[in-house]
Amino acid sequence: MIDTNSISSVFSQVSKIPVGCDLTTHKLLEKQVRVRYFTDFPKGRRLVIPDIHGCIKTFRALVEKLELNKDDHLFLLGDYIDKGQNSAGVLDFIFELQRNHFQVFPLMGNHEFNVVDTAQRYSSKAFKLFIKKINKAGNLLDTNGKIKPHYFEFFKSLMYRFELPDFHLVHAGFDCRKEDPFAHHLAMLEVRKQPQNLKKLNGKRVIHGHQPVYLEEIKQAITNNLPAIPLDNGACYAKRKHKTLNTNRLGKLVGLNLDNLTLTLQDNLDN
Ligand SMILES: [Mn+2]
Picture 1 (spheres, rainbow, N blue to C red):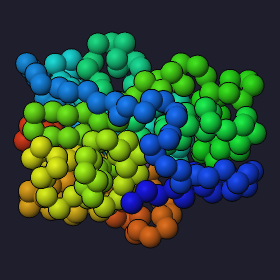
Picture 2: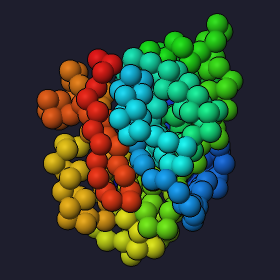
Picture 3: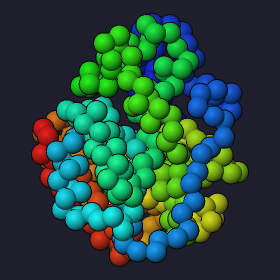
Picture 4: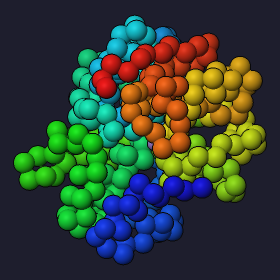
């Protein structure tokens, strides 16, 4: 189930570009679905944080609360930009951690993908319109209105999924109606229906973000050993509106420890 609303709303204003195009003909980035396998975790914890969406203070506070150290692996599930106050701030903090030799591994989210896709496939007019739609995106751009090269290169370099010995990490999930769910990268960025079993997923559970859910749902998925664990509690929606959800029950940025499946929660500090 591909949700192209976010993409189509922009392009419908400027052209008749077909946005729900066949994924196999998608030229952007690469056709190959990029994956990184992690087999060895000699020391430290394995931590996961989902959709940060420009909430830099919240992200920093959660990293502090987790007492991240250099033996830990910190996996980020994508959607660093848009919605929150400081998209570039989130990217800069990721770079800062990596520069300081923290083991931080960011995945692609649909928001990063859309930036690269739009820049590569459409006119600069369409791109500018698209960028206007990204909240507080000004600091991602140079004086000509183009994405600063180091941010753009970062977006292009992002992997679609990580496979660990016991888990899959991915922004949105997998489309298990497909023969080979690992061959469909847009589904990994946009899918909203989660697998009911792990037959096509090497028996490994899926950790994903993308779709905000209430904390109860996250906890139940962990406790009931469900095939997929959602992690996005819509940190960026604190004190804001969401089209279908009660935002009083959203607003925490979630950290998951994959080794003991415990959660660390951080209230939104940005809104
Ligand atoms: Mn998303």
